[in-house]
Length: 180
Image (cartoon, one colour):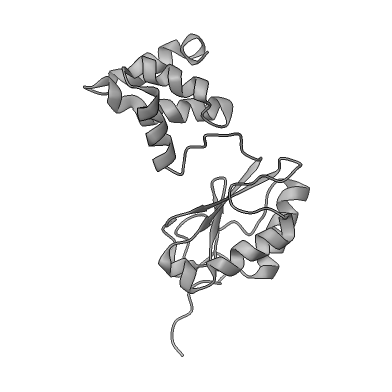
């Protein structure tokens, strides 16, 4: 499947590396771009391309949170659970999402719009609690903001509250507050 459709691109990716196995991450990304996730069939195909075992490919996929081993919702919600976010309310954030969408980590809404996942640090420690939805960051979250974000995404497919990584202070003047 993958080899037939992307033969030239696969060859170009593999040619970048002195060892074929080093092309594993970009090839997995190619698969995920194509399918939306990395299926067992694709893992086996990538393993064969790189002279790896399917279990070596699966180990890689299970280590990196950027790869999805099963189909995801249209909006992939990743909630940071690192210490910094935990100290400022990451657990509350998980409860707010569960209350709004009725899903827990690893679950997808019945309409396949939202999938929820807890991940380690998303490198936005000064603006927690925060979450990443697809490629957008949402920072300094409150329950009202979470409800608005999820409502906007469901209705419009986008939300203007997306801050993107590392925009501190946020463009609207909000951001890290220092002092007393």
